[in-house]
Length: 123
Image (cartoon, rainbow, N blue to C red; front, side):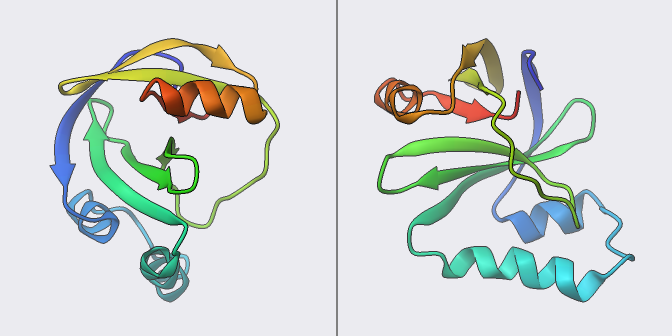
């Protein structure tokens, strides 16, 4: 994302967001819905917020409970990858995510983000 973002819609759950934004799951609807439901079973992660931005993209924030680290994810069915690029770091201000900087994806970077109540997202 790497830019300030305006939140235009809030959703109670990721499933509500996917359905509310009418995201096309036709490639394999069952797998996509199973993946969304599986998030509720993770004991070390919690989806804390789901929202859409001014561009019509669906985003969600996952809290890593052990670190109190908030990670921003763009919802995209059937996509996933590991990446060692730095985190884009955001500060939450009402219905805006304000881009601050990039931070390395290491223990120290994660600690700084968590201690300052920031949100880490894809670079």
